[in-house]
Figure 1 (cartoon, rainbow, N blue to C red):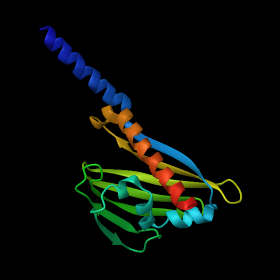
Figure 2: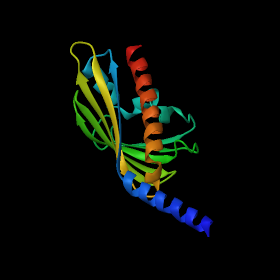
Figure 3: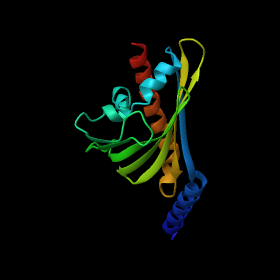
Length: 173
């Protein structure tokens, strides 16, 4: 009988945690880059350039890629399909471009799990030949995945920061 109470308590705790952590998952990371904001924007707006800094794009050289539209313009769609479980399959569509200010895109994941998220790069000039690049990822976190939200936020944030570090190296080379 005690075992049933323990199991019931664990289930209750997990359900409560699911509701507490439900809602939007938002991860934001920023890096300073010693390049003019216009140069950084012109590099980032081309989704093909993400292969040079994004940890996910670089994780599987054998990943299948497809493109629709004109890269660097609103409506461009990049599709990927990887057997690497950390990369999965999905597509990214450019949804907004404000020259030297921001880039917006929608991510539609197919695998390892279906979901939709928004991504943003926000650029802020610090004057002269440098700027800040802020990368934002935002998506819904619903039960039961919401239980993992703190861990997912930490893991995603670490990958985003490593990718931003790669971006800085590429642009400052």
